Amino acid sequence: MDHTLDLKIPFPTNRLANIAEQVLGVDKELKTDQVKRTTVVNDNILEA
Image (cartoon, rainbow, N blue to C red; front, top):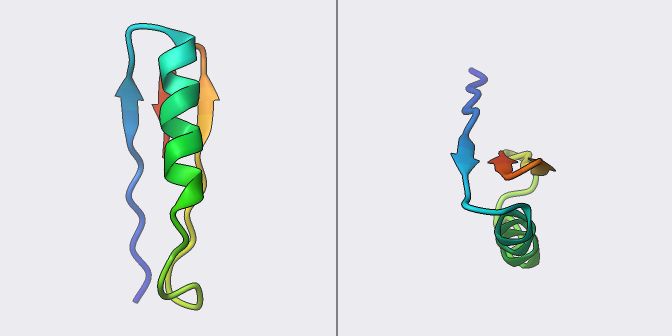
């Protein structure tokens, strides 16, 4: 069974959204065979 969760998190500035993306990128998934995570910044929105 596959599940999908799409998040759009607004930040006050593009810089803060980029910092949040970098911080999340450091954490590695524990179960890489079960979880696929992607993040992207569009303007001041972090999409995960």
